[in-house]
Length: 114
Image 1 (tube, rainbow, N blue to C red):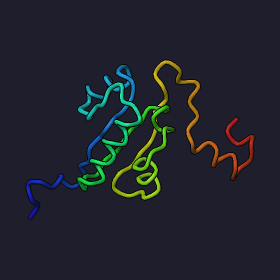
Image 2: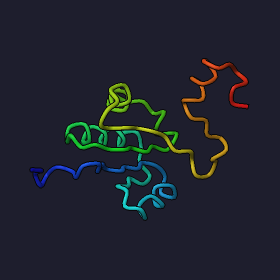
Image 3: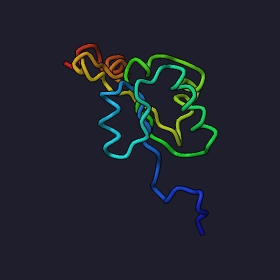
Image 4: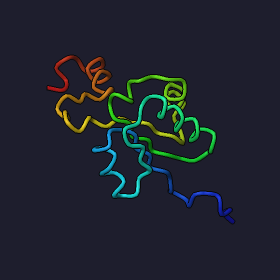
């Protein structure tokens, strides 16, 4: 029997940190939104997630995804119940280059993504 404090099977928190314009759209689908977040907010939210035991998908706007920090680095390296990925900036989506692009180029060569 499942305790009331546990998430239903397959349920996880969707957490979005970024500019108000980007994050606002995610609030429409019920995401936990931290609009106009900074690196300190990212660290606070990630620490709370790590200590809560909740499963979560965390979406960070690009500048926050590259801000570093103890909890950001730790959770990225751990993998598992908290998945962190980045979102392109709303005003410049064409400038977005996901980190996986570097890995693909390293493995398949510089022309792989052209």
